[in-house]
Length: 68
Image (cartoon, helix red, strand yellow):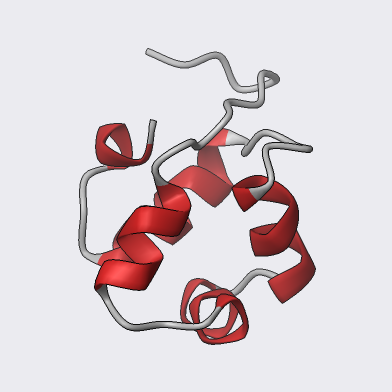
């Protein structure tokens, strides 16, 4: 299980977003996060905290592990 305080890179995020035909802004709106967060996560400049990972996975209709 992931630690709460750790952030995790999401190298597969962009591919899943594109596969669903979403823009970064649309994904941010669906997941309830800022589109700038999606940009930073996709560029791997930042990792996602567990809560953000779950929100993005839910919005993309995938399991959280699929984004890792």
